[in-house]
Amino acid sequence: MINIFKEKGLAIAIAAAGLGFAASAHATVLLPGTGPLPVDILASAPGGAVLATNSGPIATPHWSGTFRTAVVDGPEPGTNLDFYYQVTNNANSTDSLGRISAADFLSQFTTDVYQTAAAFGIFIAGTQWATVGDRGLIGTVGFDFLPLDGAGKIDPGETSYTMIIRTNATAYAPGFMAISDGTATYVNAFQPVVPEPGTLALLGSGLLALGGVARRRTK
Image (cartoon, rainbow, N blue to C red; front, top):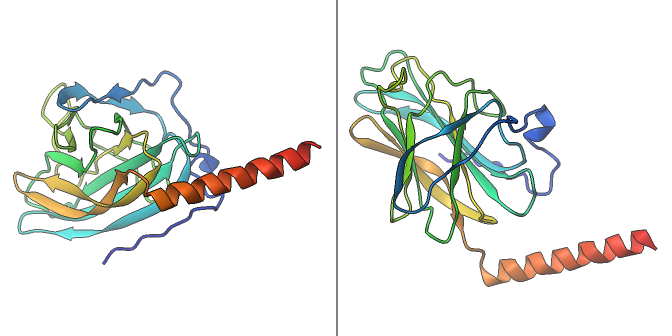
């Protein structure tokens, strides 16, 4: 069952926990149809207000574990949404995991990708980083865990780093996260969407109201 906690309007933020960008970090930019490309590693999460989270157990014939996902209004509120993904492979599993992917990141959205081993919020400390990331032509953004340069798959007893997809989206909806050990297992996550006209009108009214308050305070 989905357990989503919406926290819009609250001053609950990952940044408040003392988490910020690593100074030397550079985003890996994924255009539609690009990759595989190395995914930059952050010392900590980018920060921002948590809008919704979902997590829970996974059980398949060959592996079991826990997934974690969230959508975050980034460090500059209202300009971008970040989508977070992580999976733990239980120690008693009999298979390793090779890929985490998310949909639907359509062509109208930019996608910059990062990963971090840091623990924060619902996410625990990661032990296995993704080797490369890619973006398909139909909106799938994927992270591959390959036995290259000392990296490897998410073996039994390991937890992936938290994968972060930064977009220029300002609205989100329910979506899916896929975890693959050769066969994909799907769980409920989040995806970016274009705001509906009614939402845009409401947002515009809110911004006008905030502007009026700001003007009154300066008088």
